[in-house]
Image (cartoon, rainbow, N blue to C red; front, side, top):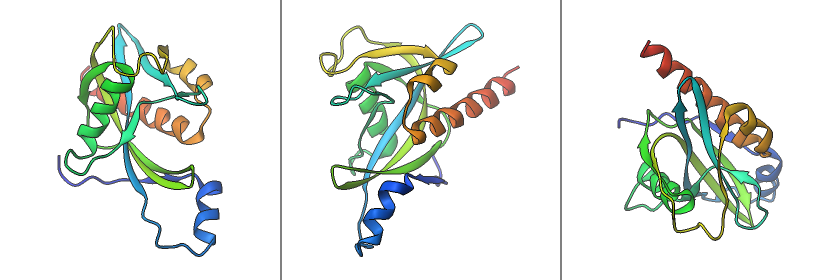
Length: 165
């Protein structure tokens, strides 16, 4: 898939504290995420899952393993965390950095067109899964970086549907 051009959105409040403490050589842990979507007639829905601890609505995300790469890691996270099978469409939507439990993560986010939703999946007992219209996703997603990726996904989906008309 060619060279990825990634525009990173930094969750400034949390990351600035880390870099101001004199630890400028912190190497972020790569993670991969998808914004899973499906078309139902003229409507577009995205799939959200709950986080394990705080039960906030999020997109599927997992640690990127060097041997599999970002896209494969993102698709694996979608399958394990939400029971979703599909394909990444286009290049990355972007990335963001997040400090979680003292560890800096850099999350690359991809748009995923869902082809199938499994009835049973690995994290089923740990997470809820919900398909929602795009406007409801705006209300449910509380983290600004997830809101941003939702907006980028809307733009990408709109561009691809315009191209096919």
